Length: 130
Image 1 (cartoon, one colour):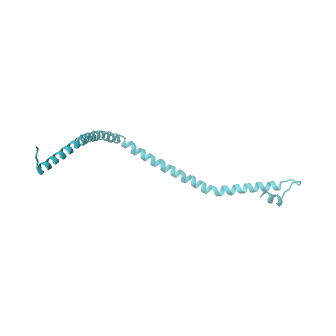
Image 2 (cartoon, helix red, strand yellow; image 1 turned 180 degrees about the vertical axis):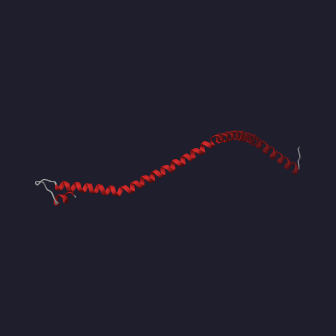
Image 3 (cartoon, one colour; image 1 turned 60 degrees about the vertical axis):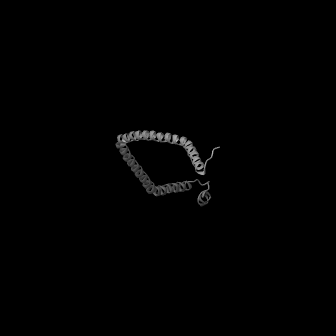
């Protein structure tokens, strides 16, 4: 019969636990290795992409700056045009309304003065049209 003391049983249990740990860690380590490789590949590709983007930015940096300046100028011209239009509307609205009111009043007065004798005219007609 096999006899073992307590130390041998503890050593056997520790060895089995270590074996189980290693068995479960192997797939994790393999996956970790694949992940690190993928990160390296991604880093390499991103470095190439960044170099390409930097070279494109260097080539288009001058025209892009000029385009921004042009956009600013167009915006300022548009703002000035809006200000000019508001100025004309504000300054012409009051005299234009006054002139139109005068013309409509004169037209109304002339129509009532030139009516024939048989028609209703004068103050009663003015009151009914209001």
